[in-house]
Image (tube, rainbow, N blue to C red; front, top):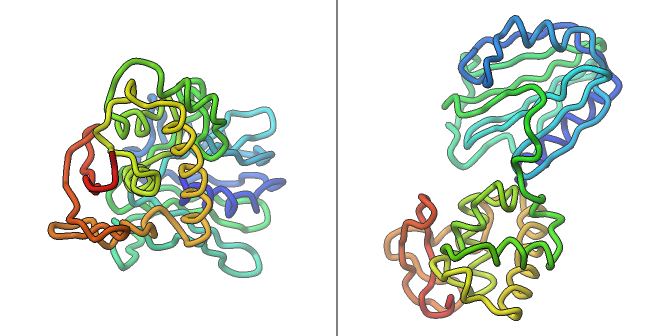
Amino acid sequence: MLEVESYRQLVDRLVGLRVVKVDARDSHILKAGLTPSALATALGGLEVTRTRRIGKLMLVDTDGGPTVGMHFGMTGIVRLSGPTGVAYSDIDQLLYAPKRHDPLWDRLTVTFGDSSVLVLCDPRRLARITLDPDESALGPDAGTVKRAQLAAILAVGATPLKARLLDQSRLAGIGNLLADEMLFRSSLSPVRMTDTLDQTDVSRLHRHLLATLRILGKRGGSHTGDLMPERRPGGRCPKDGHELVRDAVGGRTSWWCPHHQR
């Protein structure tokens, strides 16, 4: 979600501009039955009125037309060139993205009335574009979630804590690296069951959740956590030096310290 917020701030420069051309070169990223021609027809001539974000989903509202939903996957990158030059997002190199750029990876190009051009580049084709996505399918945004909301999210049934944090329908925006970092910082185990958390645990998790998003946002992305360099066999806990454990939680690889994360 940190990278997506960077993209949203970049795309916010397009508010007030009208779409003059849409070139969806790869129909694979178009979902819910959307086709390149249908996307071009739906957006042609519309003005961008607002940009929003819910978790990992970026939303671009238009004047009387559909809302464009953009999900970037692990390697999707937004580039924007304007009439006065080229502006790049703060996240123009993702952890899992190749070190080079190939124009063949440009999946979507949108040209605006002032000659600005937005490009969605994704080498692994994991990005998704939809029109009028179902926003109700997502839980509250992790960056603004209140303590009472988090407590209610954790209180629904018994499941491993990290799996609940990764469930976008419950809490939108937390990915694998963010979850491990905030659990490391809050001294909570990713495999701990949610029904064993007391009010002190919930308060500590809420505090560190927001702090982790704030700190890593300033650093430049979810891959900048203190735990990140040690996410490997033989890696050591940055807090106490104990060897990290690798587990699969919620279908994702998890690294955590059994000494201080309980």
